[in-house]
Length: 218
Image (cartoon, rainbow, N blue to C red; front, side):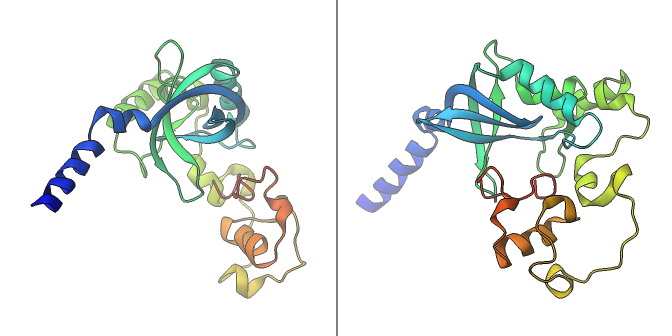
């Protein structure tokens, strides 16, 4: 009976407001990596935050720099609230970021046409409504008649990457250590991970966050 009581008490703590508050924190934004990735001071160090539910154009993609500038204007050197949702496979905190005046940075990016609703990882249909509104008004990236979703761009669907290449079965079967050393020489995340993990090319992870060539392995 005592063990049952302990289990019930633990469950109550997990759903209590105190536990929920532990998943949120406030801090100053010290860096904007791109439109949907920022760094916020937390417990004395900069913590990388990936905005939940959305996906901004890549840096080299049309509107990628505009998305980064939009985010920078709203958050740089400001105190924001980070509402943590999960930790992704790269160890990044995935969260909704609340601006000082109470607006959601995630939603503002979609509303302004600088981010897509990331349907694969989000079931929040309200983001879809914001996206539809931006598309109808041709705001931001929707002013392009044929915008390319960033997840397609990362896998070779961008207008600048439509180059025919020999078919590859896997990075390990077609690449050898020493062949390539820079992100610009690679075309897929699997290729990047081969050279990063198997060949030990540390410079592929310039900011030391464990994610090499972030334009390909986001």
